Image (cartoon, rainbow, N blue to C red; front, side, top):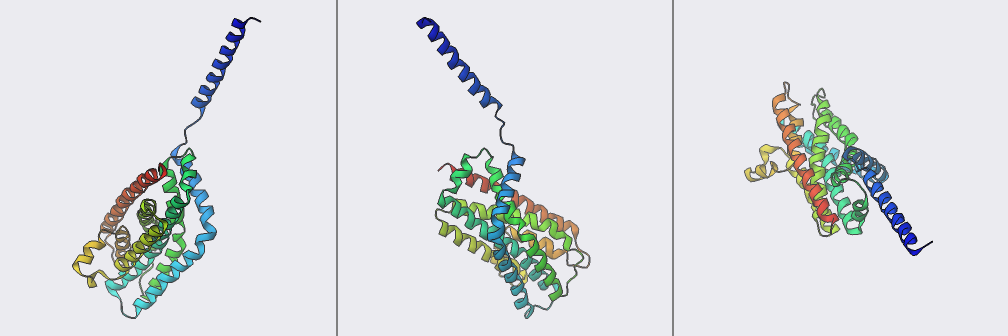
Length: 274
């Protein structure tokens, strides 16, 4: 075989290899958002099941203990509604805000974000999947806290179904905030501190009756994402709830959730490329 023929065969073989590689690249399907979200959610749910369940009990006992303490100084009325609603949403804040801030802070410090960065999944699916998994753990604790609070303060249980909207909306808002704090904090210790401070704010501004707060603190309360979930839940204890106001509070909570999750997604992209 002549040198020209060998060169032609080599050129043809190289072109065939390039064609196959290009075809493989073209045929490789891009990861879609919803399947990626479901995969991340299942993985996070499985990973956190063993490690987070004991902490969920701690969050529930903490909220129930706060209600028992407040029972000695609050008799009923609007103050009792605020205590029960705030204590119930506090379970969500403990898990979705505090623990998620710690998780993403540790993930960033340990280089775990590099693993997610190599996966062909959209950044939003990573943030939403982790946030959804952590928020899912708050459902039983929130229901138990709300039920015990209704018994302690003699409040009606007929509208506890509204928690089906309060938990995911408040959970999304708080989880987005927690993820953003963990991803933006330069050190995991600072992420833990910020998560604790956020949970403390949810405790002080959500559980204590609004009427007893200074005006400046009331304005600060309006900036807390969980406030609108607390307000929506507290309104349902009225004899004739103002459902329009409940809907407005839930809509604001949903809007805050979208913004906080968008910020968390941006923070994830920023941390993953560093």
